[in-house]
Structure formats: structure tokens, C-alpha cells
Length: 366
Ligand SMILES: Nc1nc2c(ncn2[C@@H]2O[C@H](COP(=O)(O)OP(=O)(O)OP(=O)(O)O)[C@@H](O)[C@H]2O)c(=O)[nH]1
Ligand SMILES: [Mg+2]
Image (cartoon, rainbow, N blue to C red; front, top):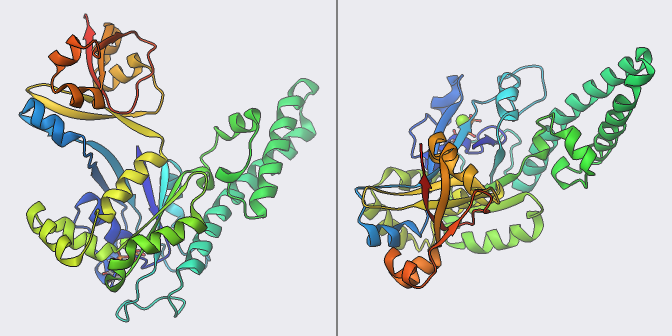
């Protein structure tokens, strides 16, 4: 699972990246010569891990992870593109979701290209860039189909005509500024689209990068923004990138103290990571034991046997049954043995749909 970070120049992309992945990539003027994307991994903090640790005292605990990619700034040049460097478009298209950073912080030492800081304007400008990238691809494909149709045999015409009609309609809506993720698609259109990797079709998390002085109002700002921008496939969080980056560099205790001094409640960063997780339609199941308590990431609604393959293909191949208890039931019972006595630890087969929070022990035979 990979999330691509996008945004206009100097909006704080690399800062947010560092905060998410606890990384040390150069920011600000130091990053001027950066030519390679930064890759990082964020651990998904899950409040269910701690009680499981207390129950099983494992040697180690492994949280779920999300990968983030931060792109260097687009080179100055004749193209109007501000937010997407052409050479990285492919990489961006391969990601599963976008994290769109919008500058809402005031800082005279970081001049804005447009002069004034205006996050609403910037958000719209970047959305437009994403739409342009998709339109360019749609136009090329539509033109190509038109020229192929001229010489196509009768038997080949039908599928090409259908693809043409679908793409042309989607293109028309995109030109009216409806991102693909908000368009109503027929099953056939969705199938045709699956062959492409359109940017405006990806789920998007907007990170409203507020200044240090606004941190106390973060929750209120976020509430307001949600009314305006939350939609199907779009989530929004308000956080101060710079502060979160500083906090990510501290150890837990120090960070905790700092947060309470600042009056910060739930870390903005954790909300951002969790939102990315939800946007992607991901859930976690857990494996537990004296060696390891571990969260595993899967798509919502996948089968027990597919979930097993996340751990090892041997477990998938030799799958017999899965012993499952829900997280809530396990906590109520206090132990697996008690869960079994109460009949809450049950046996499920290959096709069982794994639920968020299931505690699973796979029985297999190789
Ligand atoms: N005051 C303040 N400054 C910030 C904040 N976030 C980022 N900055 C500053 O803004 C400047 C640009 O931040 P970067 O993270 O490098 O921004 P970027 O979007 O990666 O920039 P490019 O990759 O060059 O497009 C740096 O000097 C940061 O310290 C913030 O929340 N508050
Ligand atoms: Mg950067």
C-alpha cells in the first residue's frame, strides 16, 4: 500500500513526510537540489495493540504499516505544472491513494509563489493539475481509439466503440471539474477504468498544514473543513506539519509532555495515518502469542484464506481452519481460554470474511 504526497511547491510536503515516517529528508532550501523521491514507512498506531500486549506479554509487537512517497519539486521550466514533476508522474500513478498537502501556515521566511497564502485557492489549483494529468491521458486514448476505429474490422468495432463512449463521457465530466472518484460509473465503465491509473480516481487525504499559532484550534478548523471538503473518497485533517515533524523526532515521553504543554489532544499525525488507512478501505486483523503480537493489513472483506496468504503462502496452501475471536470479545473474556469456554472463540473456514479486529490463529498443514 503506497500513498503519494502531492501539493504545490513549498506547502510542506517533505515536512509532513518526515513527520509521518519519522524521517530526516531535507526540507526547505536544503531540498532545492533533491532529485529523487523520498520513500518512507509509517507505523499505524492502533490503540488495540497495548491491551493485547498486556494480555500476551510478547517478545515484540509489530504494528501495521503504510508507505508514503514524497516527490521532489517540479523543475522550473516552460511547463505550467507546479505540483507534479513529469518524470515522476508514472510513480505517482502507481500509488494507491494521494495525500494532498495544502499550505495554510503563515511564515514570512517561506515566501509563497503567489504572494499571499490562500489554502482554498491552492487546493483548487492542485486539484486542477491532477485533473489535467488525467485529461491528457484520456485525450490520447480517445484519439487513438478514433483512429483505430477508422480501419477496424466490423468484429473489432464493438468493444472499441464502447470504450470510446465510456472514456468520452468520463472526460466530459472531468472537464466540468468532477474528479473521477466522484463520478457515477456503470459496472462496464468501472471495468474499463481499471486499465488506467487515473489520479483523480484515487482516494485522497487532504492535509491542511496549519501554522504553530493555530494548533489549539486544529479540531475546530478541521470540523469546518470537513463540511466543505469531505466527500466520497476524500478525507481531511488539519495539523501543523512543522510541529508534528519536531514531535516525531522526540522520544515518546518527551513528545507526550510537549503535547500536553501545547494543549494538543490526539496527535494530528495519528489521525492522518488512520484516515489514510480508512480511505484505502483497509482493516487490521491480529495474530497473538508469547513471541509476537502483530497487526496485519488487509482489504476490507477479504476471505480467511487470502488473509492467511499475507502471513505466508504455506499457510494459505495448507489452510485447514481459522480459530477466530473478535477483539472486543477477547478483551471481555480476558484470555483465549476463557473465550473458548464461553464459545466465543470459533472455527471458521476458507471463505469466512475477515472482520476488522479479528484475532486469528490459522490451523494449517504443509
Ligand atoms: N511555520 C511553518 N513552516 C512550515 C510548516 N510546514 C512547513 N514549513 C516550512 O516550509 C518550508 C517548505 O517545507 P517543505 O516541507 O520543504 O515543503 P515542500 O512542499 O516539500 O517543498 P518542495 O519540495 O520544495 O516543493 C520549510 O522551510 C518548512 O520549515 C508549518 O507547519 N509551519
Ligand atoms: Mg519537498
